[in-house]
Length: 474
Image: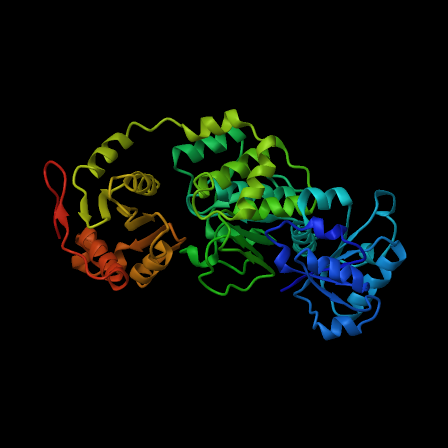
């Protein structure tokens, strides 16, 4: 993929930030302009812009991104038509406000968008091109739901703020309501902060069974993929997620971006590309989704997450977010927390904590986040038994091997496992273990984790007991 600007003066050079100028190839017809751009540090080639020979010589292909920035309106149309006659590319062309709605090559071609000078100055060339691509994909996405009566927005078993916000944004993109596009889960929302989000923002997440999926014309998975579910799903139609792709799921539309910190960022980009009005409620949900999944942009975040966060920030009800972040801790969790820290075991820089029967599984990642704050700890592995399944959460600082890869290597043979570089999860049915391991899942989990851990980080000493009363060292 290349970024290419077709121009007749030096002005477009200023639309490109200093960090991206070496990524851009400028094309012009004036050799004197070519020399001036090269003196400024740009890459520039000279040739006839209205013919196809230049584009054939440069092997311009559909993966390239084009900007047509010419002063003369007629010349813009001719050059853009010449590019499109050569090959279909995503392109933007500079227009004036008074001519923007006039029929042109840009208005007739789905991969081309007209932009104003003020938009280029504010957002930059590359960001405007990304918006063009996103707008074209949004048209494809919306076409899937044309004349479809009932749509289901399906999220994971215990949906987090990122999943809920993404589903709410998807509903907005499709101009639907909670009756024609309900948000659903096979499980239930359990974490206090997530329950607070639903209550404060008045968002309904319904609990459904697998047999009810047949009632819907379209099924959309948000912040989750088919391999996550224990149930056998019917064909799903749309998947939008930021987790690594575990299988090549077949559907009508798939947008999986594992480099993104949050699925909410992807949906914010679709909203922005479609010029959809974002209400305070939706902005608050999306920003909270980005904030929680990236730990306030400190974990797994990229520039797009920061840009989405900055875009949403002025629209958000920050008072509500503060209330979501500080929900009341249920009294029954006090005994669980006490037990968790009574007998942990530490192996070098890895802390292991295991809980037996849990009343809800969300306490496991909560404790894992807390354990990572212990002095000298680089990895936290916390587990517990819930509904005859062993739930495991792993956390690290993202500076060593990927938590998702390690957990997948250690536990995917026994259940579902995966995640990101600094946070991951595994769910293992007790029935998948032999009798000995099922009776002592703590020993099994620690052994399997260390087997994989040691293959990457060399051998480690035996566990040492910690705490006032000591811990089990094996």
